[in-house]
Image (cartoon, rainbow, N blue to C red; front, side):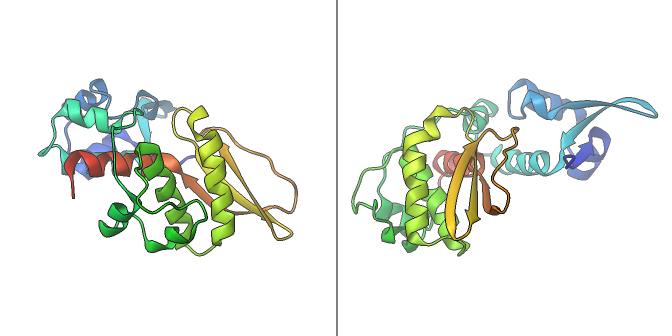
Length: 207
């Protein structure tokens, strides 16, 4: 399925930003180079962007640029993890995750979590909240995250499937497709980069 795109002209009109600001943010790497998609149109070459991603990113930049410098924003949107030390209880108290994750067999009260620990609990919490996975299934996915997540760069997409009552998950690059057995139904698809970015935003600007 072709990605939903928005033209540069429509983007500038819709968001109210200037041409100069858009390309300044590009130079500062607030907007990834590969989001600038060149296409031929009947009026000539034109630049397009992935609609949902660019609109969400510009909204975040506009919201945060009064609190952070462009360099700090670039660090927030980069793929590098932050230095974090927190506990599951603090994350629950702050509303970042729900108490549902305390039912996971791997849950350790008072455990000191780094960036990846926060990320994995955030992913599990997202899966549990939508009600499609039980604690046992989510715990198996957590084991996969612990084992394989760091081998991907940037953060992968997590796809979860079910076939004849058996649930299995796949980590994959965002741009790559995946083939699974006929009869397997996708029950969840989560771009983990969204949670990655949410964590970095939270720790950069606070609550």
